[in-house]
Length: 265
Ligand SMILES: C[S@@+](CC[C@H](N)C(=O)[O-])C[C@H]1O[C@@H](n2cnc3c(N)ncnc32)[C@H](O)[C@@H]1O
Image 1 (spheres, rainbow, N blue to C red):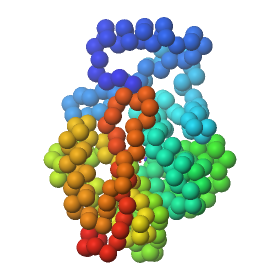
Image 2: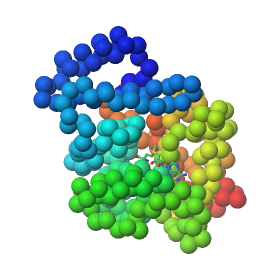
Image 3: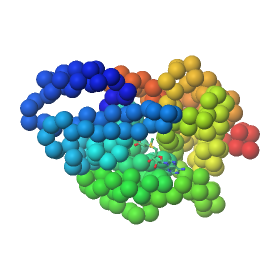
Image 4: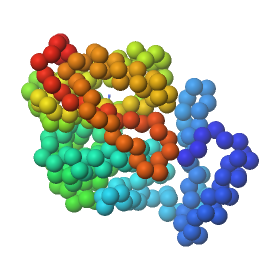
């Protein structure tokens, strides 16, 4: 996927790609465009027609559905590959809450890693339907109650009322909107969600929060604010970047929750 290239740059790029790939493959050229403060996307079929239909990709022996044509996002985020690997290895016996679950690829990895249960929460019905299909593709049982089409803040309100408890909560939303300019505004975007997650965490459980800052200093400041404003959270680790993935903007911080401090107030 490329953004705002000149026509000659695009032609060179397409020629280069066509030379590199086997002749039997289809090629879809997908551009992310930014005009007048708005993102849009454009798909151009260069060769073949396989890319028009949904298909499955394989990662760590798990299978995920990909749809290249319909939307900007295709169903699987490659920058979450090492997070899925981490869940495969570390989610054993955990009760997991997967907020902003999208197509539930993190849930598939957690379930295959032996999680007791994963609750997926997303406001998009179509993303959750692909999520169910990802469960089917991996021979995982589908419990309709594990796919919740609801806004995250509403889900958390109900879950607090029901006194739900989890061993691991994942907060992986889209990056803060462009109206959040300062680090404080970006922090407040996450703060509203983290505050509602704390009552749902068991003592010594984990909270994983994604951050998508392109400037490393912004990322560091944001992370420091989380630790300062939530003393009940301490960072234990960061999930490494996927191998062969050069865009190092997405980070996943693993926090551990030790209750009994004033941060829940
Ligand atoms: C960046 S994607 C999440 C990626 C996902 N965690 C993964 O690893 O594949 C963001 C998702 O958040 C969902 N979303 C956005 N705002 C939401 C809200 N207020 N409540 C629930 N879901 C929301 C979107 O529908 C989208 O599926």
